[in-house]
Image: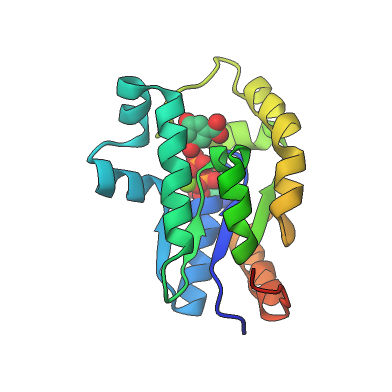
Length: 174
Ligand SMILES: Nc1ncnc2c1ncn2[C@@H]1O[C@H](COP(=O)(O)OP(=O)(O)OP(=O)(O)O)[C@@H](O)[C@H]1O
Ligand SMILES: O=C(O)C1=C[C@@H](O)[C@@H](O)[C@H](O)C1
Ligand SMILES: [Mg+2]
């Protein structure tokens, strides 16, 4: 199996952290998650960074922790922040990883987001916000993804699909 990082991308609520944890456990790899990295490095949560310094600074930091994580060896399983596909440097760095795009309907993701309230700034209409984000980011997700997985299934099934696709992955290392 190719020794490259696995990165889970997708909108907020897609299940990146949940699936990333399962995939990492199955492979005996370190699981890395953007939110934990931000807190370790800056001593502030994503919500605190957004409130104190603004969304632009938060997104810059989210891209930076992803790009650093991609360089770590042994390779890890990384849950990227949802914003990172909008950053050209992050998309370029993702060429060196096996990238899974977890995709689901905005209605479902909004429902999941309501159950995990750790996010900094939302429009009051979550579903509309996610619909706009999905429209804007879909070309980026498609550009970076080696696998697009249906986020509506149970996490264990998604993790199995990721592992099977990764095992046969022939992506050239760039
Ligand atoms: N496949 C799934 N089926 C049902 N519930 C799920 C699934 N994946 C995740 N969840 C639940 O949805 C919520 C969001 O999941 P998770 O935190 O993994 O998403 P995320 O993509 O990491 O979100 P964020 O971008 O906000 O970090 C959690 O409550 C989680 O338990
Ligand atoms: O636009 C987004 O998808 C995001 C915005 C910020 O809240 C970030 O903290 C979050 O990771 C993703
Ligand atoms: Mg997460």
